[in-house]
Length: 287
Image 1 (cartoon, rainbow, N blue to C red):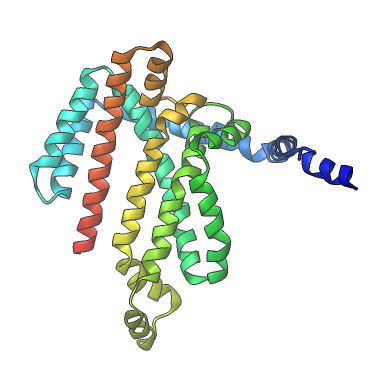
Image 2: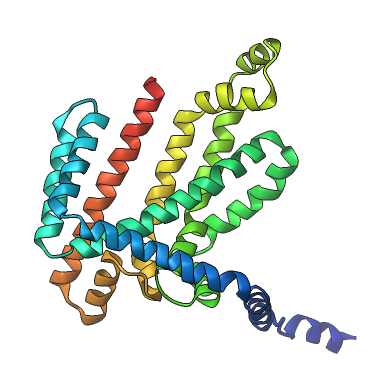
């Protein structure tokens, strides 16, 4: 009896084998879905990146500066920083890498928002959905970012597409949580008033709840974008192009100078994106 108990506690559970079997099964059964995504979505991202690279850098810098100027209430601080920062990245020869990074972050953030906002709305409307989704979000946020590279490579190989996939999983939770929180914080009096005027569920959502929760949702979007950007260096380990690849290459070669310049480019991009989204959030809150 004691031997059986000892065997029970010392027998290794085949988690690794089971995970590999499950991944192989998913990859095999859904290859008809993964392959087109890898092919066509990858082509779309390459086209987007190539199109932006084809635009002269000074034109993009001017456009970004104008957006920053009007977005910040016609103040020169953000516009000036954007011009100097982007000029410096171009001056150091990292413009193409910047565009690749921006493409990855933009696409991953857009997909995260497109998924996160509806899921957040669902959570705010259903306690059952909230009870089911919350542990999943906890799991997604506590899992080390490197782990997301494993299914990304298994399903999509290497390149920018698995980088977007890993960033999507890592960056989606803030938008979901903040959307749920924002809608739940809408005043009950406003909800009752809209119902008293005969608003339908859709009218109540789009004309009352989402506008009132807009500032909170934008805060979640800001966090999502920044998390997507934080995956840039990690995604470079599976072949994603951009500034992250330069940082990784410099790290492998112990090239401090190159690594510092590439890292500085990521910091500049992060500051610009963060200020853009924060300014947009504050402007929405004032509307």
